Length: 156
Image 1 (cartoon, rainbow, N blue to C red):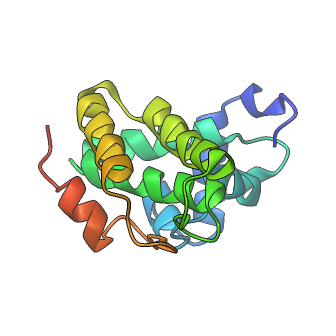
Image 2 (tube, one colour):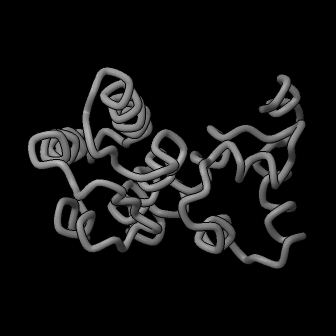
């Protein structure tokens, strides 16, 4: 996690310079090479002391808007949140502890979802809770079959 230096100077230039240093032509390409890795770990890899997860997310959304792939990124962010909150996959039983972990993942994801996709994100969360995926389900990327069913690539 960053200690506040992440907002000093031109963080966008710093973010893209680090991406290029690692051999990628876009932040999206860098992130796609690390599927299901939580955003804070992507930020740490790019600059442990001077980049934050929210900056990585901001850059990813800017690129997704330009390439008209926002829905795919919304699914990608859900995969990253699920990976962070449910590292062993979807729980077999939604007891209080597991319900909290699921709620945390869905809540963080919903908070990171752009306004254009808020309603669809709410519907996805409701669907996952109403008809839970199989125990141990752990999407490995935004093209997971279940996620594509719940949130198809129709851009809004």
